[in-house]
Amino acid sequence: MTHHSPWDVRAPQPAVRELVEAGAFTGEVLDLGCGFGENALLIAASGLSVTGVDRDAEALRRAVGLARDRDLGARARFVRYDVRQLADFGEAFDTVLDSLVFHAFEGEARRDYVAGLRSVVRPGGRLHVLCYSDRHVGPPNPPHKVSRADIDEAFSDARGWTVEEVRETRSISNLAPDGIAAWMVTCVSNREES
Image: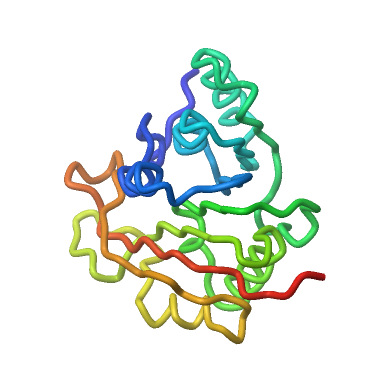
């Protein structure tokens, strides 16, 4: 049985490809909610070490197979883990990618998730977040659309972040041939070394 879902577009997100081409990923990289690993494998192919995290065991098995098939197994590691528990992950990274995870959380769950993000981004490290935008005009009408105010609230200085850039982009999706309006957010962790 083939594992298939709306987010399985069988390619890296174009906005992530742009970041890779711009050299926006450095050091050790974490890809949250990596799914089948296409974004992580693109980053690994650029020469960096990447850890992909997802709670879907079948998706991770496919990611490991793709890494092996592309001779990227030495640079791409995949770990089954629930991103809602990031505070307990026990590792920190220079660059973290959240591709279409952040927007799934609201209210207190979002605050807890962002606090967990702080624990996996080294001080001075970067976080790149691709999320659905409230500027999308359907169809489809994706759930969890995020406003600019939501971004500013989640990634404020008070919460340990400095927002470097918020730009409009598109997320490719099996549900929308023309993609879904999205934000690409880049933040720097301004927390102190502990």
